[in-house]
Length: 411
Image (tube, rainbow, N blue to C red; front, side, top):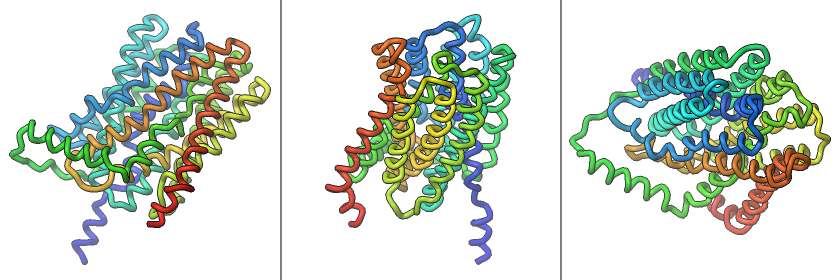
């Protein structure tokens, strides 16, 4: 009994996983999703080019499976999380500082910061998969997305507010200051030392291949993987609305509230609401449910008058819907990941990369749609296309659920 109590006391609290994921949120949510579009538009870039740049800088979240599995080697994952979290803040911060004077150099630096930030996600995901119980995995998503989207949005709001009166140098310092302390919090995770084995590197990769095959070539996991690759929870409208403040007659302060502080609070609330979903039920259901609300919000924005109140209310409500979707998303990823296996960071990285791919293609597609419809209908078409894509997923999922999914869930 005493040994069991000591073991329980030594477990890492779930909120700490949310804290160590903050550098990932600051770079990807605070900078790339919340504030970068506004900063690029302020520098004179058009909506189509902004969409291309945002899509480019988001590529690491889709292709990081090519390099992020290194966190399964050499050091403990918490050491990796601390190192790459600090590096992400450094590169992204310096890149933001150079944005106005050397935009191409800035894009390269921010790209590197984004790449390192994804390794934070890989390290934390591997620790969650290896160290958490089934019940903890179901509930940790709210904390993770609260730290990722919630804190990230708050930092994005701070960047937008400061951008009205300060230069990019201070904004870069904010990125660095909000990445380093949370990154170092990873050292507090109670992670055992890696087991020393006599396996050669080639044998290790063979073992990894077997685990990947069991995960990705399983009919049981196919529905979850297809839902993850759908455009649910991408927040494409939110990423690009920062570049449309002129069209909606909104100020940077209003954008900072809607897509930053206010949006960040609602994102965090939405993420934590995902904890309310019962542990034993399929995580796909609330994830798709979030798409219903998100489609309603973006559809309303598409037909509403182009004024500041539309941008503010639309962004606030879409942030809540996105937060709830992402809270369910982490649980769905871990549900698809399953239990066991040595290379949990690698599997988590691959599944998460699949789930992140829609962020890239939706940002690019929305930009193409906006360019196609021109300056008059283009801004509306971004929200309308986002709504239509989410609604299409809801319809397809409903058909699958009524025909096959419900019977599988009962079985």
